[in-house]
Length: 301
Image (cartoon, rainbow, N blue to C red; front, side, top):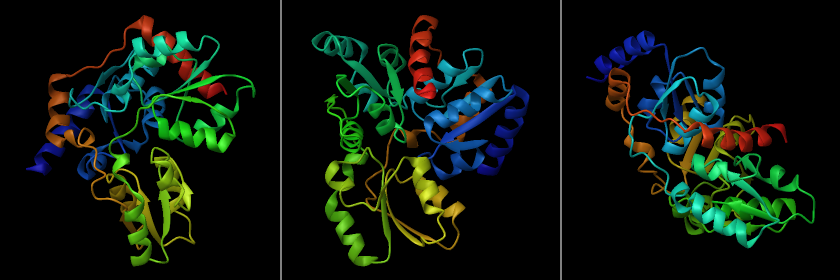
């Protein structure tokens, strides 16, 4: 059955002049049919450069919005309209405006894991790989608000030596990764290295050999001197790690670290999206331009 679905997807992909992109946390079979697999901003940037009329974004809603922000002339589809991000939903534009009014001289650093409306209210965006550099780029006396992820914000502040005002959002999936699980796995696999995502809690980060974004985790695990890795992020990345690193062993810190929204997307839903050209994600132009300015400032920083 899946072979028939893949055949149909490939036929529709060609007919629609579509590109299928999938986040590292997607189901293995969805990653396997994608033209590109990566992190959210990386995928949107690649899609913007490719001559395609349609972008099928296998990820969560804010990711499809980012693709729409960077590719306004392309049709952006998300195979499941309910594939949202709980952390992104922990702040909205009204709440951010209120916080800004309480700190009128502050600059807002916005993690890309946020809605287009929140990006539009921000001064500059950041990713998990450049958050520390972006925070450090401001003058020492500049007041900084970091939204929405308190743990990434805490990590960026600690690494840059800056004080930041944190919004108390977090990723529920990464919050399931806890120190006792690392300690047990270190006992079971004493030669393994521990790499974790900076969305993890500070007590988890303190136990890691390396802290890195999803792209950074992939790069770290490719090192020739590393053969066993204890991985602290959403379980979907294990599929790609094993695929790209035959002969190496990967142990997820927690098998509970599964994002249910990422897993909503299936091959059947990708097929349906291409057949019906829905659900479409389109960011209104007035919001898109403001949000794009925050993304552009990050890329220029």
